[in-house]
Structures are given as C-alpha cells and as structure tokens.
Image 1 (cartoon, one colour):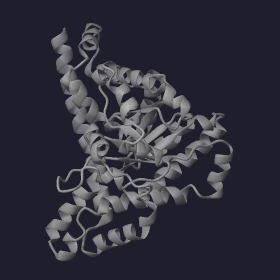
Image 2: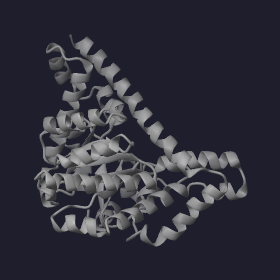
Image 3: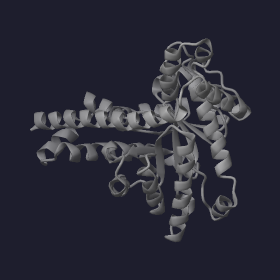
Image 4: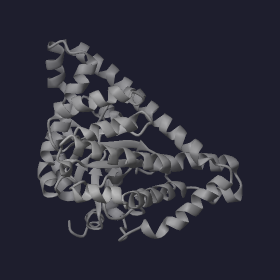
Length: 369
C-alpha cells in the first residue's frame, strides 16, 4: 500500500477521488475497499454516472418499488435515490472528512443540468440537495456557466460547500475563483463559520485534447500535427498557475487569516480518450500540492498498476504550456471557440444523460406498480 503509485500520488499532495458511485458499490463494501487499497479519499458524481448506475438497476429495486407505491414521479424518484446514495457514501467517508479537517472525505452531487442557465433555480436546488443529504461532507456541484457564477457566490454565502464543475477556460476559472471569494465574504458577513466551507474547481482535461486535436488534424500541416495531444495538459497546468496567482493577494490573505480555505483545483475528465496516449497521462502529468484528481476506476487502476508518479509535474512547465497554447492559436485553432463549444456541449451532454435517466426511472416505476 505504501509503495503503490496511488499512495505515492497522495504523498505528493494529490487527493484521489473516484469519479463514480452506485448503490452496489456502496453496500457491497467495494467503496470501502478503494479507500483502504487505492488511497481514495472522495467521490464525484454527475448525471451521466447516475444514469449508468440507476439504469442498470443494481441495488435499486426495493426503493423503486417503495417510490412507485407512494406515487412518486420520475423526478421525485431520482431525487430520493441519488440523495440516498450520496448520504450513504458521505457516511463511509466521515472519518476521512474529520481527519482531513474537511478537505477530503467529500461526496459531490450535482444540480439538475437543465438548471445550468438558471441562477435562481440552481440556488434553490443546491439548498434543497444540501438539506436532503444532510451531511456536512456533501459538496453541491454547480456548473461554471455565466448563470452559475452568481449561484456559486450565493450558495457559498449560505455556508454550503460547492464543487464548481464544467470549467474549460482559464478566463472562466478566474471568474470561478472570484465567485468563490465573494461567496466566502458573504458567508462571513452572514455569520457562518467560514473554516467549515470548502470548495473545489473542476477543470476538465481530456475533452480539450479531443476537440483541439480534431481541428489540428483537419488543418493537417506538419506544425499543426506536431501539437497533437499537448493542449489539455498545457491548459490544466496553466489552471494551476491561476490557482497560485489568484489566491496570492491581500483580499484573500485577510479571509484566510479569518479561517477561510482556498478553493482547490480539481482535475476532471482524466480518462484518456485517445488510445494512442498513455492511459495514465492526465494523472501522472498533473501532480502538484493541494490538487484533486477525480478518476474513473479504469484510470485509477491503470495508475495503480503501472503509473510512474513524479514529485511535481506542473510547476516547471508554465512557459512550455503558454508556448503550446500560443502555437495552437498560431496554426489556426481558436482557444476561445474551443472552450466555449466544450462548455455548451458539456451542459448538453448532461441534459441528454438526465433525460435518459428520467425515461429509465419512469419505466422502472411503471413496471413496479
């Protein structure tokens, strides 16, 4: 255990979170096994994950039958099922949460993706999810859309810990940090214990390569092709530089002195999409202190099996990363166009998954009557 690549990753400052959850995983003991044997200290969920786990039906039959008997519709059933999974997972991680003083032992649950452009709706559902799960170590996921930014501030201001998701651009990440700091100031003004509030900013990695590489191949020049599979790491590394810069000012220092916690960067979408790339690329090449990496189990097992983990694979690469993104622009790929598209697609994909989940749960409820 102490010599595994995952244990080394944790020792080098990266919190390992699992990007998956299901009732079978919770109740079979498999989640506890990952804590013990894979250094896992948190869990993230999203609509696609719940669509996959609930769609399979494993472990949900009894609750579906109870909900059907009570006359629940699909939306109510999804709310009850997902919040129960998250509450049970929170209980499993309660010890880690206490030992880490709230930095880890976290389980995230996302507001409905259809609310991504609805500030008021996002705030209302975030509060509803927090109250329903009723665990201090839950994190409410809010997408980093323009409409999501004021919701982040408002929800943090209520003393609720937030996982900001679907971040693709460096400019938007700066706005997310600003929304978080404003939220901490609001929480302090509202009389909340700001030392209890934590947040992560989920910066999506692999999708950046997927979209930019597609455009580089279409351009087809030697210069363009030489840049393949380099943009995602460059973007993620520069995000870490933003983290270092934007929490190094007097405004933040005053809040930190009052007990506030920095919003940590979280690397998401770290499963490699291109089979030509190393299956550990977006983990072992993104190592630095105070970082979170949420991994699908397949990626986690790859790192455990053959990952080579450096002490730090971010801080020495800022100039290289800037040069790569500049070169990508120079050959004709618009960074702003890519990140705007990825945000829109990210929201749309979650909406599709949510609608599929609603349909499958509706069918299960009907079958259980």
